[in-house]
Length: 448
Image (cartoon, rainbow, N blue to C red):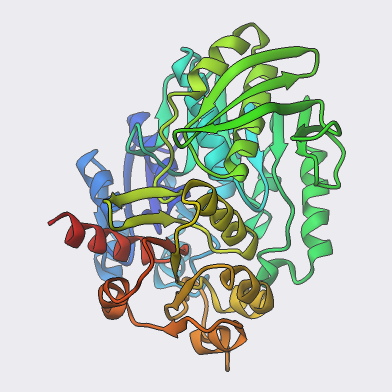
């Protein structure tokens, strides 16, 4: 960060974003002045305020703050989700503030430090969270920037020293090309973010470029067609899980790491995708410090998970409510596999909120297939996030493609009645928009 030694104030446009807030917490912990703007108050922005960070929710209020700041000592941070025509971006340029994208700033923070990165279109958050947990529990001096809220910390940021850094290497907007990790893992390269990449080939090319920036070693899921040390479940992989069993809702397994075998590991997260994430995290941790391999293996058993990654919200003899971030067909398939494994012979209702018009349009057929595996299907309207509407692309467009007799389009206000009117004993909320907030409301009703 020598380049920004003169900076004493950081202003974040979109400070409530999961990646932005982790960086905000980092600079706040570094005794910098941190402030920012977001459109709406959330639990996360309130947590930032409680930690001493200034947050406003009005562009006019944010503009007033900017006018009070000194351009030479202030850095304005933004993400690709913020439109360049934003009033605050324009004002920052007019007032001669230096602007930087979140991904570029993360690259500056981690530059020349031993960085362990997790890349892939699925599994980044859980894998990096497990990795951060393993390092923290074994007293490594670790800083972690996570893409989700670690349940044990109620934070997406860990600050235990800077001998090793854990980051998510996000492929969106080619953000990960700002990183130069010591080692990394690539969990998957399924087509996604085609609003940015246009083609799957362009996405894969960005992963190839990312590989060239890794200085030491890369671990690659065995089904991914990239060079690296393979991990997974078959003999194709040098690092793999053996003797896998499910006992009382947890995985028990052995791990083969090249010529080393670790026995009786435990993972409390359901789903084979999470078991693969755990293998990837262990591979990065052991490569970092092989002398602690057995300690990492033991620490895995105490990992409690990440918010909105297959979280049990409510359980009784009559009904079980689960919340998950899945917003891509492959992730929906993984959530389905996990719920069937944990709740065999039970009927499952899915309440799905599509995320982005472009993703819904590009993967409509795949969404229809993955959702049709559930016993009852409820579709909410598309959560637009950063996008303008696309003509003809809406929830009804997706619903019409699903070949299933028990499907319906519902509003948020209909969710509770749909659950109460269902014969399903398991309900899973899926999506990356604000469906998690709706799930919390339903949880409150059932707990009252």
